[in-house]
Length: 123
Image 1 (tube, rainbow, N blue to C red):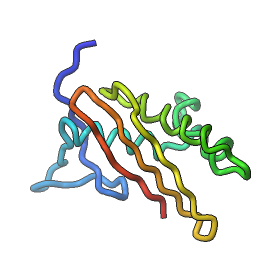
Image 2: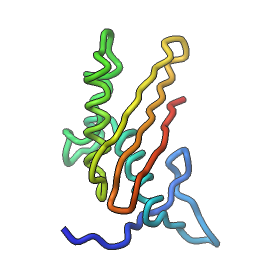
Image 3: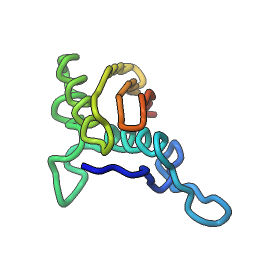
Image 4: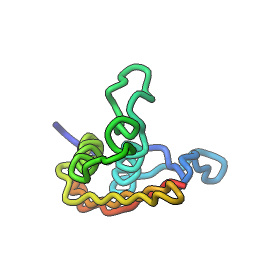
């Protein structure tokens, strides 16, 4: 598969489009890969009408009582690996605060454009 420069519409931390000089901003190269990873991890399974298998099974396998950490990391890692230009997933961490119900995902992945590291926190 031939890959060229990666480019996507730039999103802010809330997933809203960012305007630059009155026009859409663009995430390019490694920033676009990171944004793609974060969009895939935030996508809940069943949200996409044309392919309900896409997304992370948060309601059935992750945010359930007694969820196994190895299963949680594997499901999130699978979403990261589906991101265009990601060649491998190096590490995934997941923590959930039962009091606030906030969750935090950390990740490191290798892409065709280098190593991408980041974290995603839900409110």
